Image 1 (tube, helix red, strand yellow):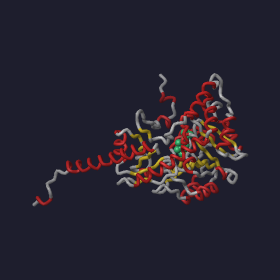
Image 2 (cartoon, protein in one colour):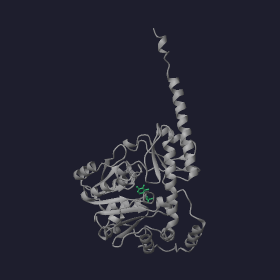
Image 3 (tube, protein in one colour):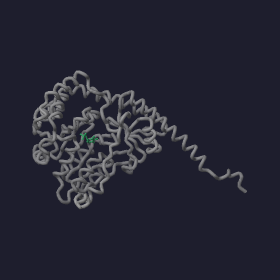
Image 4 (cartoon, protein in one colour):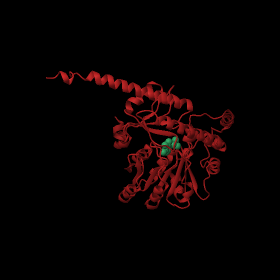
Length: 378
Ligand SMILES: *Cc1c(COP(=O)(O)O)cnc(C)c1O
């Protein structure tokens, strides 16, 4: 009998499946989603578009209308091509697959977005993670030395970084661009919350690819990522893009929604304001260390991440527990910035969970002590 063991690659069978927990009825602060819905007017507009979309036909394989809209909405400079992906996850996969020559290395600072490593594994390419500092700063000397040693075909830099939330200094990134022997992908998934971009440096650096997504901006369900680089790179990547990777609905709705880009930008501005509130609230919670963020989430260190995570869950708040995923993320949780109401609920649940843990520790400590007090000893 044919079994998966005879067919499926060893390395694939040994991968632990990427787990996304259910979130029914929870305050969902685990996935960097925009918490706001679309205004009614806009919902009506895309409803009409969806009703008339020719879903019996294959989509435009070049997605020309959507690309034109992206170019104007996102100020993509002339002379550079756009590659579209089913989320930027798919673009990562395409870039890694295309560069997966024998002996190739993919490199990124770590901890970072896990899909870089996953995509390398899927393509059977060696991935080298270069540890960040304890405060998640990037040490350019250390990264440059690792590049000299491993000669990576592709370097991924999340800007801002996920899960730490910080922007690496521009000078450090430029030094990496200047020294890299291959392609450097600047992943600007959180661009809307950072207000910084490398788009303007495409002209200067021929080995630069700027990648973004509309997911964190408020359209995670559409699945649309885009990358911008010189045509020479894009011609190659286009060969590995499956012909109809961007569906009719994503193309049409995406084009319309980006025509109203200001609505999403305003929501991103509201999220930035909420981020500041949430950060200052977190800084005042005893025992909690929040890290500075230029994204729509905040990384925080707590006394016992697993128990705080469970305590939050029991109070109907879902965040991401990062403890155990990387040595630098010991006892770290990541919380997405939600609405003002959601953030209040989160803070209240966090304080309650921490208080509960403190109380339990006192009780457990007392229970465990079976020895008589020292004064009774002879
Ligand atoms: C969320 C995220 C992505 C993936 O976004 P999709 O377009 O939804 O696939 C890419 N890079 C980083 C750093 C992210 O955090």
